[in-house]
Length: 114
Length: 113
Image 1 (cartoon, chains in turn blue, red):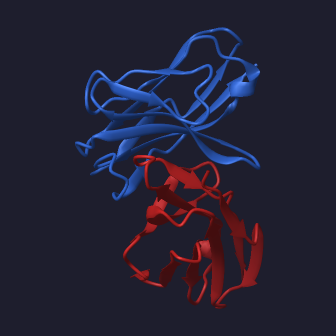
Image 2 (image 1 turned 90 degrees about the vertical axis):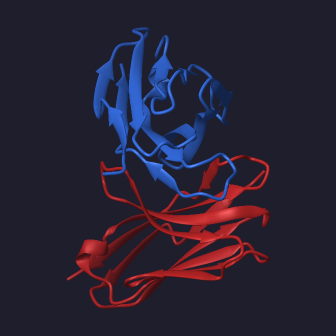
């Protein structure tokens, strides 16, 4: 089954404790991205990757890092989480970064930073 | 900068009614528009994708239209059912921004018995 898989689904952590949210897709997609969803603000892009070893900032990249060492994986790293990063996070993938292909989303990761 | 607006923010209808959800966007230079469904605590499920060259797409009881020049899309749901209750999101990919999706804040739909 074609899918985007995120882990963990739920995470509660303390301020400053580094964490990683994993994302994997099995569709051989080139383009992958991370979004966060906050009430009243909708979904906003954090980082994206056009292909292996090619990543770039989205609209709200502060406090986040990403890497793309393999085509299928695109982890989101919070080096020193803060309470304002409490949010619902989604990973997405598309066949290409040319803008005309369908996006597929993971099930989301609800992160709480206390 | 692309902005996407969805009206209404919330809608409650009795079962069996036909309904229309609206989406508008400020920059008509788009690659495509996607409608998603989001259930509470769940991910986003893609419902329909309309390419910029298309006028509409249909899937079962769902029909989405696109008027790119006026920056509008509608999602028509026929014969609504309680299982249709969810939040519906529209999103566009704008030319020059790779495959970045710009989302509206959604319409929360409740279909009552």
